Image (cartoon, rainbow, N blue to C red; front, top):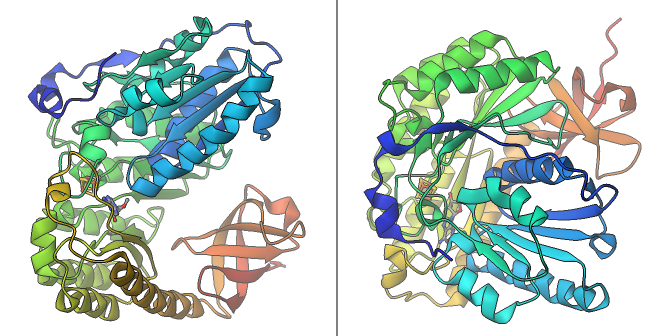
Amino acid sequence: MNLPNMQDAKKRTNKEVKTIKAQNIISDKFKNKLFFLKTYGCQMNVHDSEEIRGIVTNLGFRETLNYEEADLIILNTCAIRENAHDKVFGFLGRVKHLKKEKPELIVAVGGCMPQEEGVSHFLKEKYPFVNIVFGTHNIADLGKMILEQTGKQDIEVYSIEGDIYENIHYERDSKYSAWVNIMYGCDKFCTYCIVPFTRGKQRSRKMADIIEEVKDLKNKGYLEVTLLGQNVNAYGKDLEDNYDFATLLEEVAKIGIPRIRFVTSHPWDFTDKMIQVIAKYPNIMPYIHLPLQSGSSNILRLMGRRYTKEEYLTLYNKIKESIPNVSITTDIIVGFPNETEEDFKETLDVVNKCQFDGAYTFIYSPREGTPAALIKDNISLEEKEERLAILNDLINKYSLKANQKHLNKIDKVLITGVSEKGEDKVCGYTEDMKLVNVLNAKNDIGKIIDVEIIEAKSFSLDGKKVINI
Ligand code: 5AD
Ligand code: SF4
């Protein structure tokens, strides 16, 4: 058993990262057996789950959405905040009962949690009914681990990042909109963040491999790709060929797929060249997720974010001025150790100045092994919750304002599926990433259609299809 080790991860040089072909084991051993897959966390995990789904369908499994009837249960976990753990352990409690009734059930826990120091050991001690534990660096081993499963516990978690796999067989969630990894890991080491430890150092895929994947998706009829990485605009910094994200984005745009998106951007690496490329190509969607984390330069320094409040605002304004109708969303953490009332007001000030289209807001959660976890957490939970509530009210006010700008206008919407708001509605996203529920457009799933916006709420829009005569 290998436990994650931060020193090991740092020692490795990029030249040692190789590109290798995924094996994609095919077997009919589990023909007609059912698997249940639950994904926690970010888009990276959602996309990893598409790889996991590819691996297990290659072994003959079919997917079920009811875990009680499954022969294989896989939890793809997240480690970003403590409550992500709680959810996994809560679900494992339910699985434990099921396993008593169904001893042949295979239970696998993978993803970010096992990459954390001590977690696989904890699972071994406290959850002996879990058959397989795998990490983010060895998802490719999962097929073999399932095939060789004997009922005993099998823990394989690599402490060092593996090579970059190409030719991965994904079973994607959507036939219209696809995730495309452009890089793995992160080198930023923000002081609160576990990601550089769970996902390892930054490794960029070769530009030619990414281009090939996007071309293939276009040929398969995909209308949208989202280029994925923890810090996409640092793309290429670890490669010898001297590519940068702006160049990659431009090459992807030239392929001519109708919609291109990318997440997540770090303000530090956001270049003028990137802004120019986004503004130049109509198929690069005018939407940027630009995490702020805090509006106080003091806290930003403690967070190791490498920019000040003023630098963030300058970048924000430059993007707004250069890209017509761009929408910008953000991430904000409240209650970082030593965050004073004044610091929090600085955050509110940035929110008032930027008037974000939306934001994910979080209470700071100390993660063992990160530098910030060593700083005394000197703010009470009550105070943190109060700050979060004040922040959320402000964020929601501006989200509503941003959504209201769409009222009575016509937006292009990629319809991706049936809406959660009722069977008679479908839903999709505008170019600037607003969720729209649309009436009477059932036959338009998988198409980009014109929609007139008839109602604006804080988190979504309602619209009706424009019939072009
Ligand atoms: N506590 C709270 N929020 C965190 N994030 C990352 N680490 C932590 C943490 N320890 C938030 C950041 C990041 C988003 C994905 O999760 O805002 O941008
Ligand atoms: Fe975490 Fe910072 Fe990397 Fe984002 S940029 S994944 S917050 S270390």
